[in-house]
Structure formats: C-alpha cells, structure tokens
Image 1 (tube, one colour):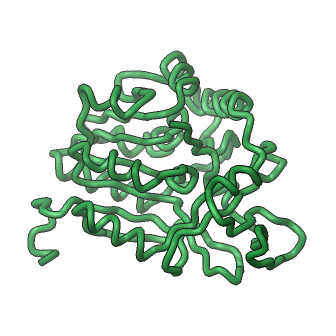
Image 2 (image 1 turned 90 degrees about the vertical axis):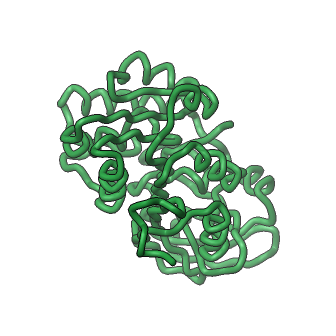
Amino acid sequence: MRFVRFLRPFILKISSFQLSTDGISTIKKKSRTDITGPFQSWRKAVQASTGYDSDLILEKTKNALLKVKNREAVYERDSVLFNKIQYSWPLLAGLMWAAAQSEGRLNVLDFGGSLGSTYYQNKIFIDALPEVRWNIIEQPKHVSVGRELFENDKLKFFSTIEEYSIENEPNVVVMSGILQYLESPYELIERLLVLSSTCAIIDLTPFWDGDNDITCVQTVPPCIYEASYPLWIFSKQKFINYLNSLNYHILAEFETLKAPPSDICLYYQGLIIVRKGTEALDGIYE
C-alpha cells in the first residue's frame, strides 16, 4: 500500500479553493488554487495530479528531523523547521487518556508517521510516562531510514500492518493527516481498529456536511516542494456512521485547522474514538 503523510497544517492552510473538472462546476477564489474538484472518481483525480518525488521529500524530512533529534532545532513539520513546537493538544490529551487506561503505559501505532514527527513533537510529555512504545508503519524507504537513524528503545518502524502485529497490540492508534490521501481509507480504518486497541485518534482530516465523500486534488505550495495528489473530503455523517458500525464511540471531537472560505463548507476536524464496552466509559454511554 502506498501512502503519504506529508501534508500537515503548514500545507493545509489553504488560501483559496476552486471546484472544477469533468464539467461538474467551477468556482474560483482569488488567484491561488490549492484544491481542485470534485472529480467523478479517485482514478480521475489521480490522472489530474502530478504525483510527488518521494525521495526528495524523504531527504528533506530526514535532514530536518535529524536536527530535532540532535537538539539543533526545536520542531519539524513537513520537512520545515520551526523555533517553537506547535502542539495538537487534543491529540496529546488522547494519548494521555489511552495511557491512563493502561496504568501509564503507552503503546502507539502511528500509521503513516513519517520518521517520527509526532513522536518528537510530544516527546517531552510522553517521556514522563513509565513505559512508552511508539510504532510507525511507513513506506519501505522511510522504514529503512528510520531504523538506521531514528529508531531507539521507544521508537520503532515497520513496513506493513502484518509485520507490526506479529508481536504488538497498541492501546491507541493514530491516524493523523493520512486517511484523505488513501484510495481506500475505510478499509484501512477497519484493519487498524481490529488490532486490539481501545482508543484511536483521527486528526487533521477534512470533512463536509454532504451525504457522500468527494474526491479532489491538492497542490502543494512550490515553496515546500512540487507535488499534487488526490484526496478525499469525507462526509461527516457517513464517516461517523462507519465508526459506529465498527463498534466505536466518539469520545471527543475537535477543530484542527481553519478552513478557507468556500462554497463547499469544508472543515478540518479530529476525533478521539473509543471501543464500545471500554470500562472507562461505563455510565457515560447507554
């Protein structure tokens, strides 16, 4: 399975929105276009996108994150260095909630976690826990670099769900800024949620209030790198109904990014979801 997780908040702060293609509709905002669509299918969105140079992105991310690891920089996101960590406090709250259910032990499955960006982002907090294991499933080249330069007794890298699940059972699954870039996101969600975790955190995910998911193409600002690729904008109700069908409650939902003005009411949200029957939820849900 190919997947990317290079579009984090820096890229996702969209300054304009355009709907066009296949004769469906055309709406233009300002002069810059970051998202185009909707398209009639994922295949048509792929045909309208240029793809990306994964080797270039990997190299940039590696160099930036090495500076963070070596304490030469404070924070990395999308291969860009910052002098101040920009936390996702709800995501961190979800991690700590999961740890609290396991006597302070945190075993994370971070799908599409790059070389450990979220791990290093939250390291100062999770290091206070008595036991931490942060597991990343990524593309083979990322796994190779991760194991060579970043892996330690807490941070581990795997190429497939099957490889990871041989000896691991997470108590929290993290899917941050990744689901919208997969051709079959619902299939992945189900595969991840059956891995015995009681909690999952879905972050940086675009929704709208329509009845069906729609497919668009996102273009990365050239100042970061040249790329464009398809993405889903999920129907919020359809998404929630699917999670309910997998036996999960929504423990909390939160805004993650300010969406641009658009004729489509697009918004980015995160969800903390918990398996029904979890002891900590007794008395909260009927």
